[in-house]
Amino acid sequence: MSSTDLETPPTRLILLSLLVVVGLHVLTAVALAVMKTPKPQPAPKKDITPVEIEFVTLPANNAVAKVETKEPVQQVKRSPSKRSAT
Image 1 (cartoon, helix red, strand yellow):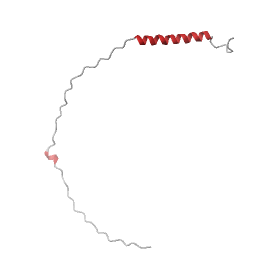
Image 2 (cartoon, rainbow, N blue to C red; image 1 turned 90 degrees about the vertical axis):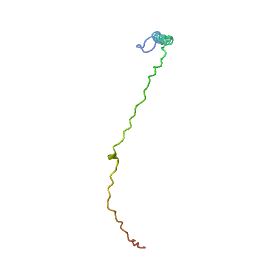
Image 3 (spheres, helix red, strand yellow; image 1 turned 30 degrees about the vertical axis):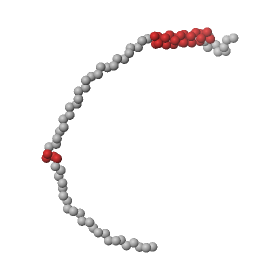
Image 4 (cartoon, one colour; image 1 turned 30 degrees about the horizontal axis):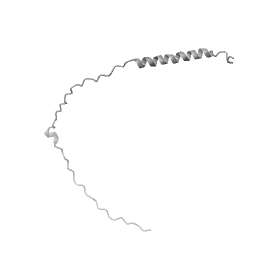
């Protein structure tokens, strides 16, 4: 008996297409397994020269800090506040 839907492909065609897809996947897997990959070669080490550092000193006239003096602030004594007892 055939299927009730007349637009579906025949079962034989579906099985054939699945067989082709599986066969191509197996062929690809075999080809990848047989292929030889090149071994990575370590990069040659370069001689690194040390970094030269030169220390800089500040001129003497900029090293002295200027201090400004202000008049001393007079402190005001507070009288004790009266608290009311309620």
